[in-house]
Image (cartoon, rainbow, N blue to C red; front, side, top):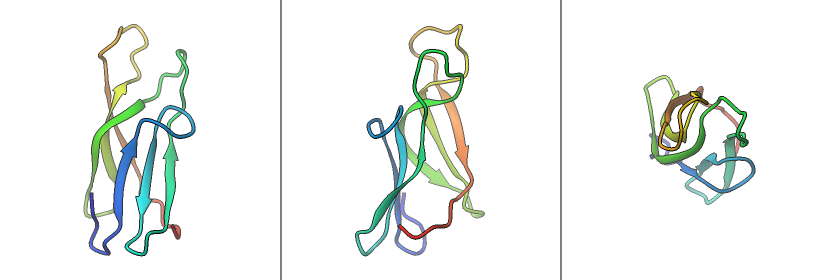
Length: 89
């Protein structure tokens, strides 16, 4: 996803934890905005996939392969939102 300033946002399954949301500036500077936590007992979204979108207020939305329903086996995902973090990347 690209914002009006030319920054790119995306997700990766790797990185610290169970995936990350990252930002890359037009000048090539990048950083991790959020790191998903891993583990079988974590009831938060894990392993983001499929990219992200952003609303007009700067909130980032996306989907994760695993979610908050620990009773569900493989294949249960989750939708997440992340308030935009304003920092220099």
